[in-house]
Image (cartoon, rainbow, N blue to C red; front, side):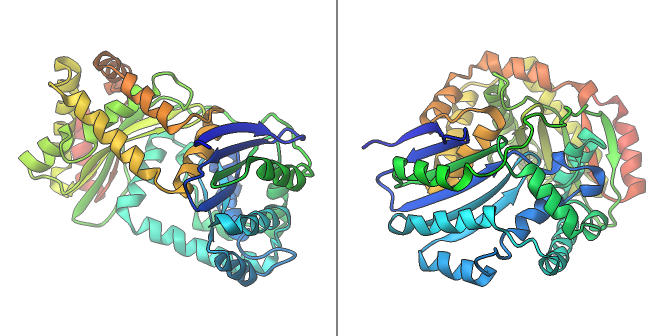
Length: 424
């Protein structure tokens, strides 16, 4: 039997994506729901993330400890995460104990307690998580950049919500949100590893077809990107900066060119920005580019931290490299090197069934596709220098530049004002 990916459907119409990997000795299962932080109202901010926590706190049949002991006795573990567009619950096990992972996952999704007592406990946990994030500027600058780029649209909020909104969540609100959003048709079931296709299909149909569907339409509106400089005050000697642009969606045919453009600019230690700003100028310890794509939008951004007095200097060097790329094109072998670097990182991430399942789940929920890693690599290889330069002209537009500066207010506002003449 060879490795393969199949997109099947239960009798009730729920997509089931199965990637059979007979050479492995593990089995990974997950349910993906097409609900994330962008589907919350302002008052609900953080409720999807809270639900992610709550489903691990016990079911009508098992306590949280019993779930943990049962899955670990099967050589596995539970996991989950929330993004702007999806929430997922996962269970892993040995291939010989795969049915244990299936049972635990099904019980979590179908029979969660969602009790008031658990909500009180998890509120405190999530509030600590929010405060940790706000005190970690390397991570928090990503939240602030999204706010600068997407403004008050839900895409501009942290997935965790705020201390105020999380504190106000109620048991009734949690239950109502779960019943409304964590149902077909915005749902998919995944199984990756040494699994039996027929057995997975029987389990998925038997387990999830009884869920009552909710209306197919959803109240999502595409965000309208903002441009300009936003200062988010921080009393520190170090400035944390995100500067970037609206990007391409997960279904845009040029999204692979965007990823390659991001790699050329800021992936690894041989990239343009690292060589110019870290190695030659010594102004940063770390600088990198990031490319993200969602169902109807995306972003391409550069992140760095530097001394407060050097924010303007680094921003001008980033702009200089962007301008040089657009005017002079790629250097000899630069695209080849960037392709190999991007492909290498991609391949290494797929050495576990868990990582392969996340890849498939996020891809399918965002684009409706479930392509093989080989097809993804082929699409990366198809990107030409002309594609990268076209993407640069399309995306790296000065008038669309959004900048988040997380540093002392007075110094940052002064340097932001000086950067009004920034050009590329």
